[in-house]
Image 1 (cartoon, rainbow, N blue to C red):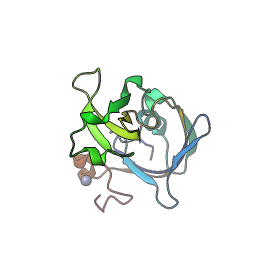
Image 2: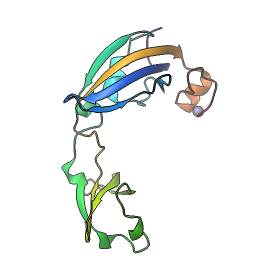
Image 3: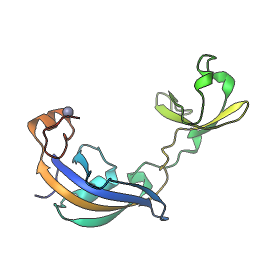
Length: 166
Ligand code: ZN
């Protein structure tokens, strides 16, 4: 069976930047499972999966705009600590996440992560760590099957057999 919209696909992958920096991979025995055609994996990889079948191995180069998007300079910010309410201030440590409006695109909410602190300010970024990076995926398709009615109504896959839920 070839991968098409509403296929449930299990696959192993490893991903690196095109500069060769390893990013992530699936665990042995635990392929990633997704419902094809619903934007659950990055668009460039989803496009490359179409038409493949169980047992296929391939590499796909995915440009940043088809992966995690371009790096948005406006989302790397230095924020004075006194803009955070006093009760929130103790939580402002590296790794802390908060939602805020995009500095120039009104009405667009962005998740920011605190990366560093000094006495007066926090260095935060709303960019995905892989924003602006071109990626290379090495993929092995493990299983392709049709989605169950339940999976289609939920809009996501329910594991390799379609039985267990979340
Ligand atoms: Zn569900």
